Amino acid sequence: MDITSEETRKLCTCFVLPTFNEEENIGQCIESIFSHQEPCQNPINVLVVDDNSSDNTQKIVMDLKDRFPELHLITGEKKGLGDAYKRGFAHSLDHLNPEVIFQMDSDGQHDPALVPKFLDLIDQGNDLVIGSRFVEGGSTPDFSFRRKLISKIGNLLVRYAGGVRQIQDCTSGYRAIRATYLRDCDLGFLSTRGYSFQSSLLCELVWKGAKAVELPIEFTSRKGGDSKLSIRDQVEFILNIPKLGFRNAEDFIKYSVVGLSGVFVNLGIYIALTRIFGLSEVIAPLISIESSLLSNFLLNNFWTFKKREVTSSLYKRLLQFHVASGGAACLNYLTFLLAFAVLGIHDILANLIGIAVAAILNYIINSNWTWRKEHGSN
Ligand code: GDD
Ligand code: MN
Image (cartoon, rainbow, N blue to C red; front, side, top):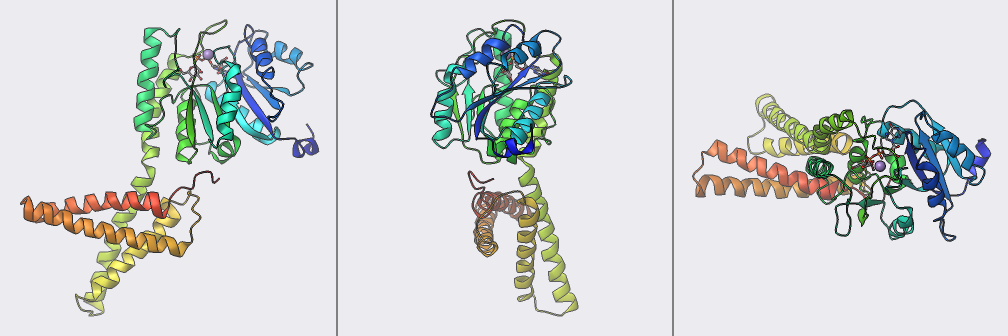
């Protein structure tokens, strides 16, 4: 493909279809997708990502290219479903100019008749539409009890560890994603190669502020062949859960480290002012407290929340940070009084409880107000 044609490509809706030995299904799947092209929507492109299938999958795709000029095929070594998706997304973003990217199984388990509904929901302002088996109206009629249980437990773990409780189906393989969000995603970070890529990607998109909605789907059985889900995939899925949890808590952990550094700044400056410069114990705290607020603000701005797209000015954020800190300091004092004077808790412990409660409030306010993630920014 030459550069000019890439630059002038019209926006499209791109389906990324991973395949591994899908000769029984891929042809029908591709035809069905193209049959749902609506005149008012962007043209459909289909990108098959085949991992050197040993059957006729690639030949069937190549033969269909005559009928469908917007059908593309890339091939590679088999490294797992997630790896195939990463390569497919990268290729699509680099060469096909997608506005929306669909993920879909190539085995007939996902019904292309729902495509217009997915696109309607994107048009309504959603950035991620999830074909969901676990919301009302969705189902998995042909799942064995064992597969259903694995899927349910897996989803529960992702929802709580990843902080995406609002999503019922975090592992679904049928999704429409606004391409700007994928461009913005650090796909390289998603170290998972197998099926757990699906849950990592979902969390990453939601953390980025993508507006997500679930569309009920019936997840029927494959048209032919067998599922490629392996034990290795299931082990990777479990090992990935703590990673999601840690990454979800990353901002809070960094924020706590900054808070701790503030204690040292405050104390260090206080000692220097009173012991070296001979300032009074009444004036010195004013300077040391403000210094620690400033150092905390700068560290949070340029480290903790560095990746957030915040549109407000630095001065406004500085002011908001002071308001939040003032509020938190009041809560610190009130909690201390309650714990010490009312509940009779030891004064040091009461103070520690006050600090902990205030730190959490402080984090919640600053994370959701001062450095609020802008929805839709990228
Ligand atoms: N290129 C490539 N490489 N494709 C692969 C690989 C791989 O290593 N492994 C699987 N695929 C393809 C399959 O050929 C199929 O088109 C699609 O990826 C999904 O694989 P299936 O084997 O059909 O998955 P499933 O039906 O058991 O699992 C479905 O449900 C899971 C959640 O329960 C899929 O939708 C998964 O994406 C989903 O996570
Ligand atoms: Mn499948």
